[in-house]
Length: 139
Image 1 (cartoon, rainbow, N blue to C red):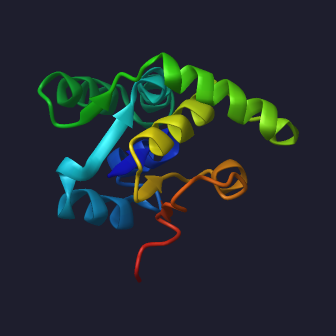
Image 2 (cartoon, one colour):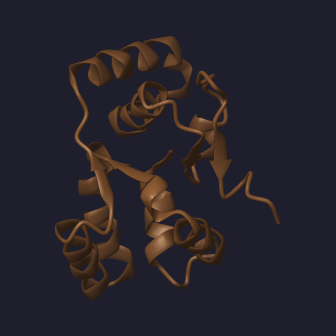
């Protein structure tokens, strides 16, 4: 199970991103292993439209609608875990989205988290020590 964070999904979609090729290869190798937490969806939508293109934004929505991506809609326990993580790691000033991504990764026992945010995801101790893609991808 690979839980995706916002930046990694942007890089996956944006051919001009320096991490695109590595993340695209990881996604193509095991698309059914990837899980997009509900909390990243508005961020991805906004950032694609604002910084990549309106057509990329529309294509992402179409891919969500046709099931190209698996979405994890979460549960109340995820929000409780997210709140605990933000309190425990208060000095990181981590927000809701990152905390929810981590909470879902914990609950789903993710083997990896696709993220470009090493400041937050590299600092938090997540049970099972999931790899961080693209950082930990074999070169």
